[in-house]
Length: 237
Image 1 (cartoon, rainbow, N blue to C red):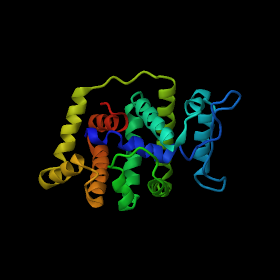
Image 2 (cartoon, rainbow, N blue to C red):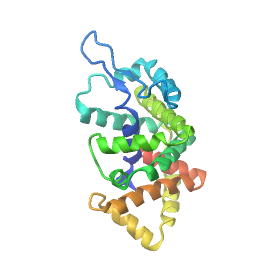
Image 3 (tube, rainbow, N blue to C red):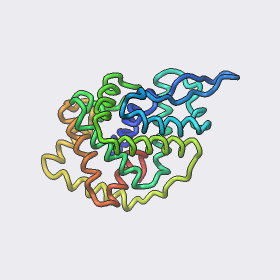
C-alpha cells in the first residue's frame, strides 16, 4: 500500500494547479500568481470553477505559496507536497468524497493513461493531463464540487499549517485488512504483482489495480473508507 500513497495526490496535481496558476513571480514589486478559470463563460463548468478561483485568489497566502517556483518539475513537486500535507488536516467525509470523484474518473481514462497512475513520476504528463481532464469533464457536477472543495481546502490547510487529524493506526490496519479481503486467490496475486513493480506491470494489470483499489476503498464501511482515503491522499491513517 505504501507504493500508492502518492497516487491520488498526483491525480490532484493533474487536475488542479497547472491549469489554474498564471502569471506572477518572486521579484520585488511583482504580484504573486493568480488563479484563473480554465473554462470560458459559455461552459457549463465555468460557474463552479469560478467559485473556486475567487476563493483561491482571496487567500493571498495561498497565492504566495507558489510564487517564484522554477520549472514544471518544481511546481509539480511543491504541489504534491502541499496537497499531501494539507490532506492530513481534512475531515473524513471530504476525503471520501474526493476519493469517490477519483473512482469515477479512473474508469473513463484510456488504458495507457490509467496505467500511468500506478507508476512513479516527477513531472506533469501532458497525455495523462489531457485524458484526465477530458474524463473529469464528463462527470456529474457533484464530483467537480467535491474535488474542487478538497483541492482548495487541502492547499489552504498546508499554507496556514492547520492541525493534523490524529492518526488512528488501528483503524488503518482494519481498513487494510478489509481491503485485502476483497482480493482472494488469483486476484490478490495479480494485485501484489503490480504493487511490487508497477513500472514492469502491463498497462492492463496496472490500470486494473488502480481502478479496482480506488473503487473498493469507497465501498467499505465508513471507518475503513476514511482510513484508506487518508492513506491514499495524505499518506497517513
